[in-house]
Amino acid sequence: MTPTDFAKHMAAFLSDELPAQQGVRSNTIKSYRDTFYLLLKFCRDEKNLQIEKLSISQFDVDFVTEFLNWLESDRNNSASTRNQRLAAIHAFFRYVQAEAPKYLLQCQRILDIRAKKQKKPHIEYLTADQVKTLLAKPDLSKRSGRRDMLILCVLYDTGARVSELIDLNVRDVRLEDFPIVTLNGKGNKSRQVPLMAQTAVMLRDYLKSCKLTSPQSLDHPLFFNNHGDRFTRPGITYILQKYYGDSKITPHVLRHTKAMHLLQAGVNIVYIRDILGHVDLKTTEVYARADTEMKREAMQSVYQDLLPKATPNWNSDASLMQWLHDLV
Image (cartoon, rainbow, N blue to C red; front, side):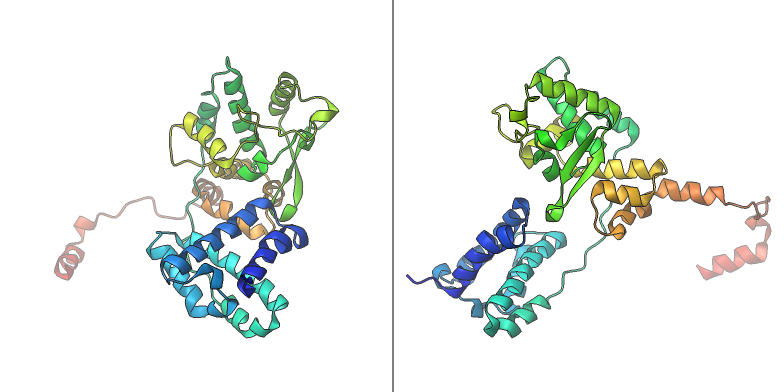
């Protein structure tokens, strides 16, 4: 069977354009792959189309919109997830319009589909006492407990995304002089984040105990499970949930926590942006908007006592009370 134009472009997009031409990270490619898996499932199960006969001409604005609505109505996806799927579709058709100009108008119409508005998420973070309680939970008499505590410490200390943590190799840690860890973030952009002294000490002991101090170990995963394999996102999530005691908490909460604690300590928001690896300062500013305690303290610091001391007795104004009564 001769491959269709959809099959050819999809294969080239996922296997060559994203990894080789654009240098997109594997986690992003997996996210895009999952989007098109769901799109094909929608074509087969909901539209009764034969996957092996799909052509690009079938994917117009109405078709894509119907798929996005199906994600919400049938799969109960949030607006955020819907928008992530749309971003993957946009990336594919942006590629197609350059590779197959005859579909240029069709692609541009699809690219005009707007993301769905969503409520600004509430930023969840832990207090300093909650972080101390969490880090006191692992059993340090066990090797796995020491490893788990170190994972949680590095997550908090660096504000790393969980994907950045699990991608760390031994070579990404420098413990001499001024300890730092090099994180590889979105868009293959790397950044160096300083490590606190205690975290550096624990990492040094950990590398020695795991026999990862030789030059031959530089490309070995920094953190690995009991089978010697690199940790996965669910594996790190399990560790956090096990000690925190809440099945809904995610490792991203520790990233939020680090950002909020830095902000509350008076660290310049530009430095916080660099530590977190944000491209746009506006992304970092969400923490400043979320910290109601800082807002209260800022208002109190400039507060002038201009209001009258005496509190009026509303009961003494019979005409006002009568007016309120009549109003109701």
